[in-house]
Image 1 (cartoon, helix red, strand yellow):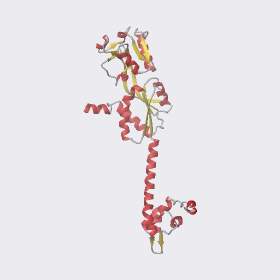
Image 2: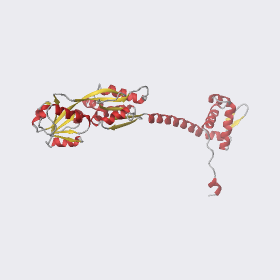
Image 3: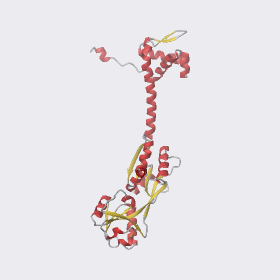
Image 4: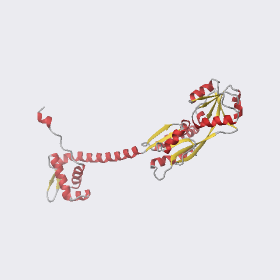
Length: 318
């Protein structure tokens, strides 16, 4: 390959302004009308065309006092120039749309026991907002409250315990504490239980969070005590002890959903009824809440308090 070809510099790139000027002159066959269409002066338009012709190394128009015609080179490049401009315009629109939706991120946090309540509605909302980056995180309730209060999460679904004044809430449901009883246990035949019925029974509870503190407090108040109570960290371990017949589990109702088996029964506990308020949460707006967060918040508040989840409605219809 000749050395001249190896060192040849690429042609300077025409600007979008120059290409747009060429397109309008080619369309109108008139510098004055093209300048008017582009809202620029005719001398500026003529200068842009001369610059483009210099860059390309060829004349693009035959000019005279009475007419403006494309040269053969102008005719040859016209389709390519129009394609370049149209694709640039479309590319800019796509870029603007992409940036708009990239900015539209909604960060949602929930306590693990409420994920099944939230997920169907998020899936439904996502279908109508496919370009929104929907981020879901599960965490302990104390961490969730802090996350919503400090703005790390836009929306939360958790327990209405010691909610900071800066956080707005919307009630969703009550979550009662239930007894999960081995199927062959004598108490498994009861339709409801009093806490006192659990006296001297070996129990197991989850060790984490405010619900544990509530359960322990009621056990002590009702004279049941906690000397026979095992504490575990995970629901899978709790259900394993119940399934083996070693323990009666104490869990919130939401933790029992999705865990059906012939090896145990779930029975409501009364006297007293111990329940947790599940609420949607978001930081109080003060005029600063992003529009997409407000839209998602309004949707969840409307749907979660008034309707069954979409997948359950479909199952009923079937």
